[in-house]
Each structure stands twice: as structure tokens, then as C-alpha cells.
Image (cartoon, rainbow, N blue to C red):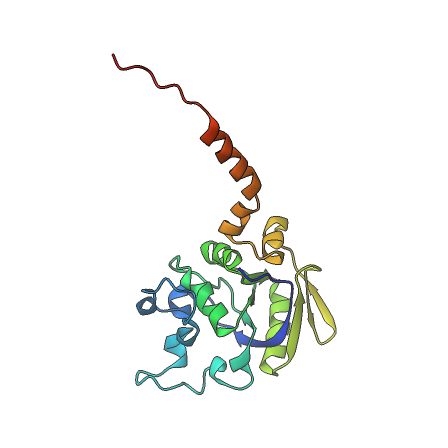
Length: 202
């Protein structure tokens, strides 16, 4: 997993409440187990017409938001079914950070496991950043300092220290396990050299 430290870029505003994972990546695109290639299907039903033409009215199809690295969203982002493809699709599109007042628990956890930073701010600050997003303003985030910088204003945010450590060091579940690789190898060596007692057959 790629480490996350500092990020700067365009932020797109999706102010709707309760944007669910089926809207983020519809069910028909869940057949793959590959983490790449899903970005083109991100928000598919909003980005494309029934004839599969680009919807020019949707923010992620417009300049400069089609190059967004952030999304500032309405409350309860990522609700619905538990699909890890949702953060995969966001990352593959180029979005590494979501800002909202709240997230669905499973989506929130899946973000950290896949290198996406979900930031919780109060409603006033989310509205302020949304207004900047509509103007096409770039913002920056510093995970180490736990702050977002937008037009010289600093927005502080809280994050669990363990999750912060994992993102800063690019550690997913496998990476976390491999941090103890020496201990695991040592234990396995002891097992392989141990003489096991096998009772005689009666």
C-alpha cells in the first residue's frame, strides 16, 4: 500500500447526504478482484447517461474537478453495503482523501486499509471547504500535523494514532503482519526444530 503523508490538489464537492457504496461503485463492476481499472466506473450512474455518454453536468466530468484528489461530501458518506471496491475505485480515479461530517463505519475502516484518508470535520468547516471547492481552489493536507490548509486557513482534525501510523508507513493488514516477520520466522524455526512426542500405537 502506498504511504500517505502530504497531499495537495483540487477538491470536488458532493454535498448530497448518504452517498452509498452502490453509488460510488455500482454492483455490476464488483466481479473483479483487481484494484486497478475501477476509476472509470466511479460514480458510474452519475457520470454517464444510459447511452454511456459523459454527463457534462456532473462535477467529476468537469474541469478542473476531473483531476480532483479530494472529495468534500455530505453526511454519512459510504453507507450501504460493505464493498472494498469503493475505496479501490476512488484511488484508481485519483482521489486519496474524503472530507465529511461522518462516514459509515465499514467504509471508514476500508479506507484506512486501502490508503484513503477519511477526514471528519464539523459541519461549519465542511461547508467552508465546499464553497472553496466550487471555486476550483486547491487545498493541502498534512497527515503528520493532522491539518488541512485551504486559503491560509488551517482545519485541524483528529485521527486514531494507530491508523495514522499505518497510513504514514503504507501498512495494510499484510504489511502490519510483516512488521513482525522476524518474530514469526523465529517462532517457525523453533517449531521446525522441536521434537514432538508421538505416542506408540496400542
